[in-house]
Amino acid sequence: MDEIKIIKALSNDTRLQIFKWLKEPEKNFEPQSHSLSTHNFIGGVCVASIQKKVDISQSTVSNFMSMLYKSGLVEAKKIGQWTYYRRNEQTVQKLAGWIKDEL
Image (cartoon, rainbow, N blue to C red; front, side, top):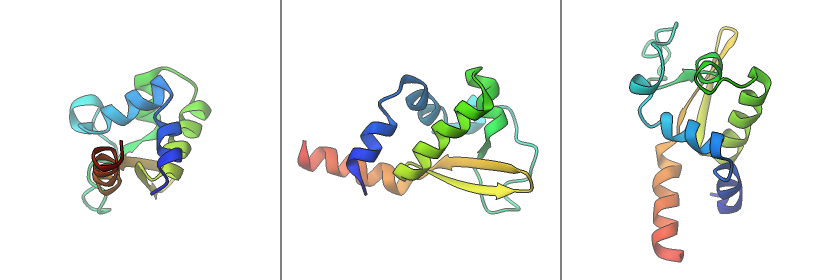
C-alpha cells in the first residue's frame, strides 16, 4: 500500500466524492447496463454513469478514476467497450489500520 498515492488520490473534492459514492453504488448510481454478477464484478460502475453524476467531462472522470486505480483504492474491469470501477475494500481496511496505528 502506497499511503502517499492514496492521500493524493483523495485530496481532490470530486475524487473523494466519487470514492464515497462507490461505497453504495446501488444507491448512488443508476442501474448498470451489463450484468456485473455474470462478470464477477458486483458493485462496479461504468465511467459514463460516474460522469453523468458528477457532470464533468468523460476524460476528466477517466483521469480521476485512473488516479484512484493507481492508488489501489478502486478495482477496474473492462467489459466490452466499457470500464467499470468499484472500491477495493481490502485497501480501505489497510488504510484504516494504517491511520489507526500510525497517525
